Image 1 (cartoon, rainbow, N blue to C red):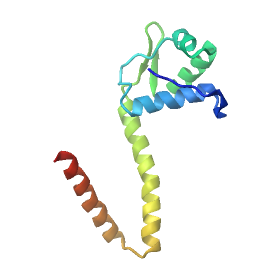
Image 2: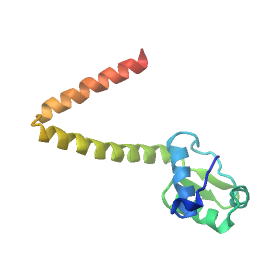
Image 3: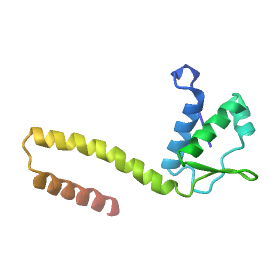
Image 4: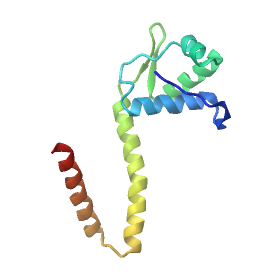
Length: 130
């Protein structure tokens, strides 16, 4: 697991860890059930206080990204696939909002917009399978 910290970023170190672990999980580079490094080991590798890593892991657990097993370690949650889908849908909803606003501004009917999206979806997915 590669984590790169930037102390000059202005973002607290523990949040940088949280953001990067969330990205690694969403990108599939950390799989459900995969174990994260122990707190002390990650703290030593990143040259930071173990309490900072512990705080990041606690936040990741609160978010449902990881589960902590008191005797065996911290693991990527098996529920993460559902969470990743929810996050993807939320990101898409924001983009769709922009698309709908643009279509409305240009007086494009909803049915025409939906048909355009269907056409583009078919075109893109057929290119990937070709």
